[in-house]
Image 1 (cartoon, helix red, strand yellow):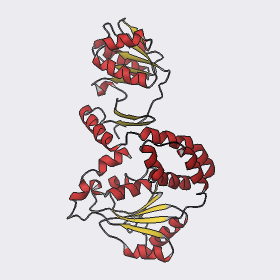
Image 2 (cartoon, rainbow, N blue to C red; image 1 turned 30 degrees about the horizontal axis):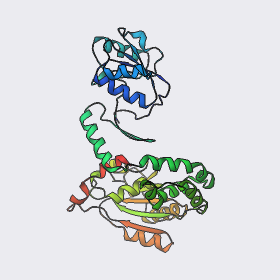
Image 3 (cartoon, rainbow, N blue to C red; image 1 turned 90 degrees about the horizontal axis):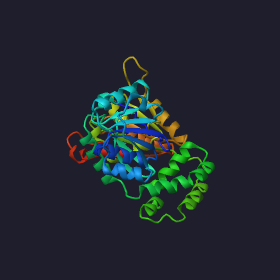
Image 4 (cartoon, one colour; image 1 turned 90 degrees about the vertical axis):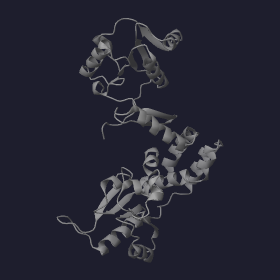
Length: 344
């Protein structure tokens, strides 16, 4: 990563914006939306800034900005990187105050991303300052995929979260429950605008789902190894898996699509490393599934591993085979897996 993604809580925090033009207006608007206490240092502030000042939403400081202005600030944004602005940015860096200088990533300690706001869902897209135009385009692609009422769905889930957590004590059980909700009719109902009573219904459903979940194994073909050629179903399963048991030759970029806290286990034969026999792999799959985990057995190439599937079924384990894309037929899978995985 070219930066560490994080979201700052700026409600009520003192923030300094240096500059009074269009860029200052745009940054101040975002900071006000985040609830920040904004001071704008500008000799000739734009009309919008003056209107906000008259409404008591921002403070205008018409004095020439100096290094002292950064003291006590949670964030500094330099919207006009002239000599004064560059000096203020240097003072902020020296004081360890997060600073962004518009169009000057080398002078910044953080980057302002392109933002998708579905309050309380917030998605930020960054290219590390290398191409703001590309970040805006990616934002547009993601916007086209997201339901307009995504924020309403998040609020209903939040309202039900405590009751569900108290009812379902196991993290894997809770994760399975929320996935079933998001894939089911309640989420569809909320996204259509009918959310009345849904929080109570979720609590009732959780009470009916107290038991240990039945494990399942998805045997997934990784295709020719190009992460762009994973099928959409393979992506979804990787992002839901509790454990990914993968051939050693699987590319790291493919494994990166798995949920971050999923366990990853490399199996098979390799020089200088533990070799796994097929019997040991079979036993591992059965063991993990019987623990109630969602297992992805990720195999290189388009192989379907019928032996592993048959072994699991003999032991009463639910199993699904998800073939990979054949190297000679890659076109259907190449359209948008990367974009979709960003949004998830």
